[in-house]
Image (cartoon, rainbow, N blue to C red):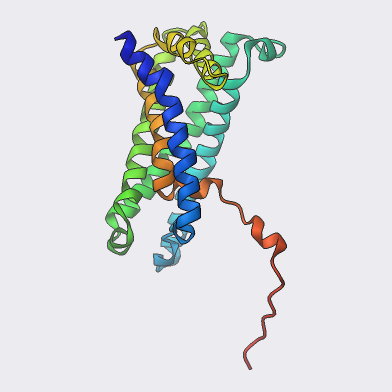
Length: 231
């Protein structure tokens, strides 16, 4: 069991990151035209469908952006830094409340998007297997994340949050053995959430998730286009 824990949380994070970086570089270099979100907004036919899409997309993206930011700050901020402004117990409570609110918004938006993609015949026909896979994996990951909030109510002292933060900080400082040891005592729901989160890095280069790191910076140096109105 100790060896499996080391492979999953000591070694796998670096494999996932390597696949993400190398795969993304290869895709951008070899297949730039596939580097897109693949929006299905063009299939909206009525104002009601436009409104549904806008609400679902906004709920999902606002929720997921705040959740990702919370994970990044919460896991990678050392205790010696945040203890100047908040205690470990209150930090956990803040994470539970904010994660519950924005995770809930994200869940509603994601369910709406998944329903539309599966129930609308034209959207379903234009969807690839990876489009549906990404939504399903994100749904499972989100449900696991919300499940960790319930699990956290059984230990409000912040101890598990400290273990997870230690794992993340040992991982980014290239100490895999300490990272695996730090996460070993936590319950299964946390480990599943972490493992599936790492697996999203593996899926990243091969799916529409790549649009997350895209920004229209090339437009800043592009020549002006002259557009004339048709007579």
